[in-house]
Image (cartoon, rainbow, N blue to C red; front, side, top):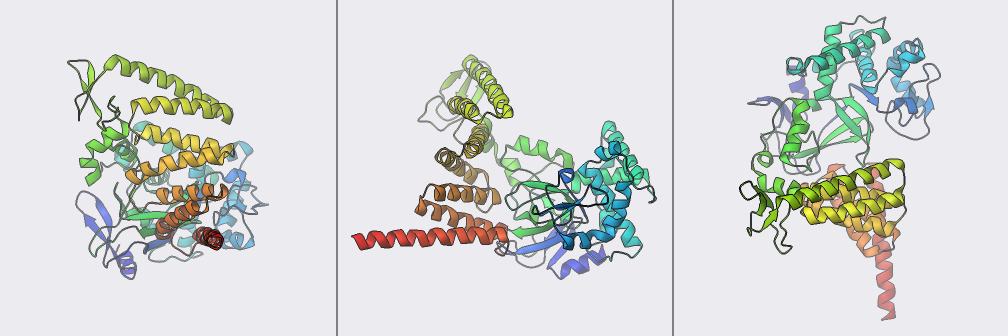
Length: 477
């Protein structure tokens, strides 16, 4: 731990023991929005769909992939990645090539990740791969596993997975109890690697970044460039303040967030979780039947009604139950149509769901938001840019309510809106959307990535087009 502290001190960070939390990462200087607090390569990683060759196993790029001719299970984007991974993959390739087809089918991304973790440890112990203060197995060893909190069936599953790792690596000495603990550590310490638009690509273990604790109101954000993880500040972090990120989707009620955090074996006590009862009622509660009132309904057992907390208007419990039953049937039909791949029919069904949800829920309701997000995707699939733009615009005010002002989800929604407006030749609106996206994503993603450079280029193009149109109008007048 002392070696890690020395390394982190150069980055103006320290590891501290925090009451009720355990280890945490603390700033030793002020950080400002957009500052890269820390970045780390994965100790071990695995694409989520490595068998299909969706991304490079080395850098997680998706272009011009070629399958390894030896094991036929690992993909690379080019010779550079293949060479950089060769010391590890040489052992991995030998092991995978020896497996039967049935065994290969049993290798989930998580098992592949642990295989790579074990091989990396072996190579570092043999001095084939160098170690550093921030890249060594001791950091993995220090991660909590919560083994004592696991149910027996989960322990049995991890033990079976550990045994498969032993089968895959017969030339490595494997301690099954230790392997079982590693799987448990992964479940509460690994991170989902995403592309710049937050689409999942795979899983990686980042032992240093795993020290960072959770908050539903984080002061920093975790993003990825390939399999390299970056933590950037989204607000000012003062010297002595803890650096926190969110482990989960925060656009949810307190109850949903707490349920999502159960896999990490702690209860969040941030300000939002302890005080946002009104927000929860708006996100999932029923709205007042008086359309001029913005109140929400609370159950009144004695009268068998739901009563508005603001104006006192009652809504019969039986009517609400009938509407809920009708909505559940509609949602079932819409979901089945979506699975069947019939976008035109599905759009109609989800619009019916939307209309019924508007009768029941607030305009900021989570359920209504998810329906509109689904409709946005359907209209995009149908190339109905006008319909897609309508629903994109409807989601943005809800995103602004649910997320912090600097959040990648909000920035990406502005970007989507801008691209749709550009397609529809609504140049001035596109410029506003692109600018809003740059203002947010430039902070969360940094300004030097290809993704942000492309976004800035789109904004510049829209600005030039808007100026050209304005110039033409001025010359005519």
